[in-house]
Length: 68
Image 1: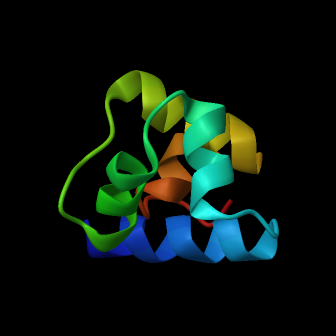
Image 2: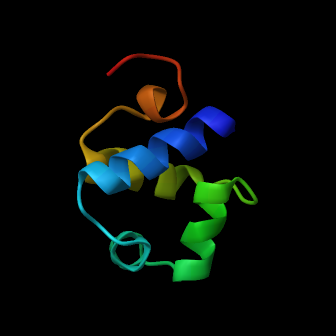
Image 3: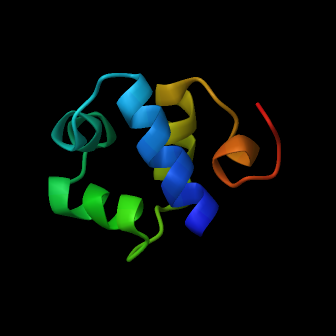
């Protein structure tokens, strides 16, 4: 989970998006998204795919299973 949190934070910063903006794109609240970044909650499969699409990376990359 630590790898996921780190990658999520890095990708959001590289994309110049706020937590609020990402949450809105996912259709969730900002506090829900913040829990993803700090590791207190895991996204649903649907939101995991949405995050991968948003940042143009694979789900495997988000989960630390590949380098792209």
